[in-house]
Length: 465
Image (tube, rainbow, N blue to C red; front, side, top):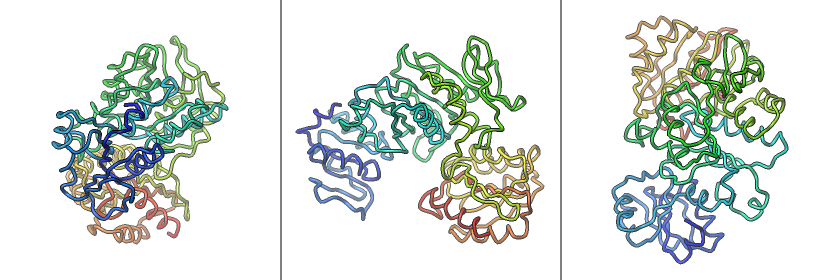
């Protein structure tokens, strides 16, 4: 929907979180009136809203509006929203408004995946920036996408790199020129009704692409391949597992060669050595492959691409090195909020690992996480596992049933004090050469406001250990 079409419409912003505030700011700048509807009580709401409804019945007056702008966290399949649309109401989102109004779709790069979106998006932005080209980072990180519609930015005609979640993609009708599909496993099953729905929600990143577009995708994950294969665009795969999955063109990272390669017409060209990367873990090597292929697609020199990739130290709370104290190294991967990310994170180290895992239930199988950690311990040195929060006992049960022989410390307290107690236990088990890793595999809401607060709390304890 064009911004000009919003004028003279009765508009409600549904969900007044970070994105809702951004939409309100934008509408206000365009002198377009708006109402606010939100389930939460006690919000700090603007006085210039034409109508405000909060609480459990916040959607009761939807029929009074012609257009609603839905926040990503508000499910599109709520009965009230479905009925509103069926009766002729228009449902928009901030991301859809951006795509419908940004004048140069051929300069838009979209990045999605279960994990790695923020790291890859930032790395792509850095590569473009280091090549001396104008670029903006937006979506879940960077600036709000509607800010990119300002005349100053539009006239600059920058590359736009968008980090896109399933929430933002699920009803998108326009796709980016370059779509990047990272690992897609399972996530947000407290929001999506099934894994299949979650995967399908990401598919619009390629759904409207044509033959002149590009999709760069991870062949190591069947769901990622499924999304990419639905695109009409040129397909560029990458893998950290097998050259056979790539074909003649793409990127390949082989741990046995300690190397990342570009493949072109079947020929391999070394990009650099994996050991030169500041980012730990094969999942981050996958992120580097994806970002490097975007750089190649834009015609940026291999030397600039590799210099940027090899010097990048990562984002906060994404397997980030915190400190080393008496030979013990601490890593914060609080953003690892699903079991698959915990396994990936723990698998990133050859050194003995003491793992902090657990938190609030996100609908995953945490007994299975315990079993997978026990299986990983047969190949890696998982010295001890400290289980926390509401799902900690379920992780511990999975460890026990699989015969895990390392130390398991169960801390049941559903509060920040659990981490203090965990660090007290560390004094008895941590030795020089060990890695202490926070990779919870679950949400933080039983103890903290969000994963950032959890990571900061862990990091503060590490710095004073």
